[in-house]
Length: 219
Image (cartoon, rainbow, N blue to C red; front, side, top):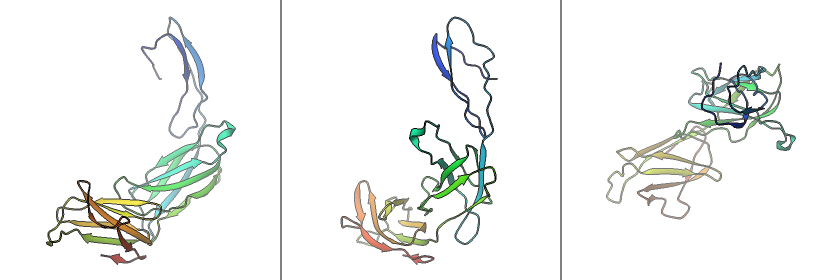
């Protein structure tokens, strides 16, 4: 049961949502001078999109977010169907409460996690018999280094940015000036470091050029 108290007289749009079910149609009700009792909604179960996220080496990938967004025409009047989930320790996820149709499936890393994720979405047509998905993280390289001043002393707690042509990753250098980008898509980047709004590395406007290779370590 659901109870709403303290409503002022007037008209209200009521709707109901529940995890794993399709949203109920909104209904218009009028509150006058007495309680409205026994309002009911019937919700239909939605479809589920299940699968697993794997690292490039085939091991489970965790600390990620998987999203499914419907790809219908925004002008057709239908409510946007959307779901998100975090993979479990085995990399498995379940996106529930979805309507049938085409979806765009994407992956994002946790906030502050400088990991490369697939840049292109996976397009899926969801039906009752849609098989489980296997989403694979890209092959990556690693970038690590230490920020030092002209005298060779470590520069601590600086913000380090690795900027690509279409994205950027940020990490905070440690107390010893060390920084690590553990999973970076292989391509060309520019490295820029700042502390207190002062540029410390990458003195040129574009920053210091860095090339990341697949499976390699760049220092």
